[in-house]
Image (cartoon, rainbow, N blue to C red; front, side):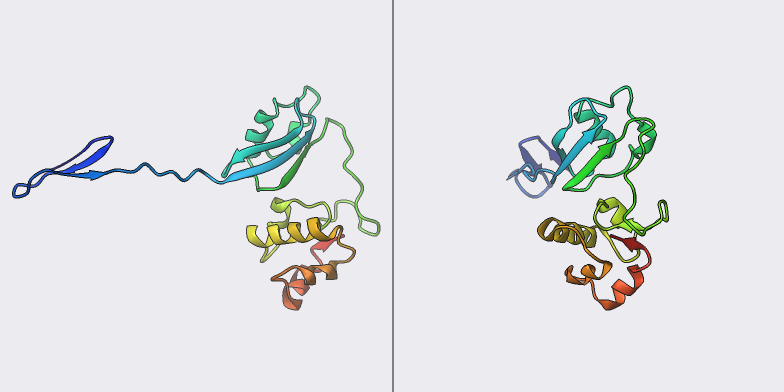
Amino acid sequence: MAAVSVAFGVVRTASTPVEEIPYAEPSAQPAALYVHVFGAVAQPGLYRLTDGARVVDVVAAAGGLLSDADSGAVNLARLLTDGEQLYVPVRGEVPAEAAPGAPPGDGRVNLNTADAAALDTLPRIGPAMAERILAWRDENGRFTSVEDLLAVPGIGEKMLEGLRDLVTV
């Protein structure tokens, strides 16, 4: 028969005396995410959340949506990623124009404005590769051409060919 206490594990068997085994509480804290939220929220700013947080969590941390916020323009259920920037538009706001030469709404992902979630929709781009693309953009500035993806660690000619028609700058 075994019994467990809060501070010690106590093991009892028929042939051995009681033995106390120290029990240590796990001290690992959940990973932190830093998300910059702005636009139609009560308190725009940089917020620290725990790993696994969703858009609804950072909106709540920012005091909620303003009365003129377009809540349908953001996916409140989407998981957040570290270093993400989230913009909440107002109702009726026209989205920023697409890059010159790119027809609006053509479905391509803009490498200069995409967040990790948008990049993650691309084939062979998972969360780690999306973070590398964002890190490259943070360190080097805007992508000037789709070919700049070759400078991102882990992206080679073959992957670039698979992405070329799906992205824009």
